[in-house]
Length: 121
Image (cartoon, rainbow, N blue to C red; front, top):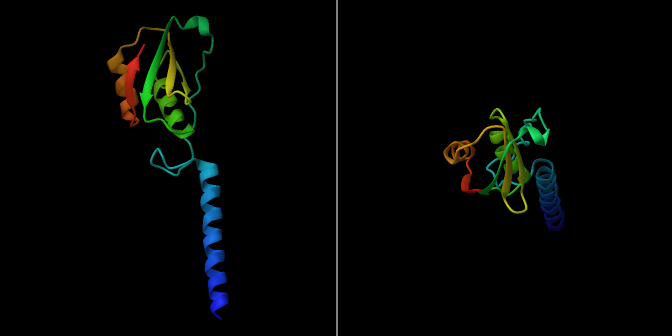
């Protein structure tokens, strides 16, 4: 009887572990505060690089996973005339713009998503 109880407890633990791993694989880790699916990507319609006269490289603190990167990209791509691409490896963002951008404007877009603009070059 004791052995059956121990086996049932072990089976329950294994099932919980498998479900947790499956959820992390599907939705990413909880580093950005949620276990939800990644937000839909905001697609830039104009991907002709010659149309973007200005280019900036941002250093952003707080991005740890693909969900974080998607949130930052979406925040920037929601602005008209901006095309942003995140490089998660070095926590940087390449921002192409048709018009000049101010650091305050970019910083506020990023901070609304919960991240911090460290540097804008």
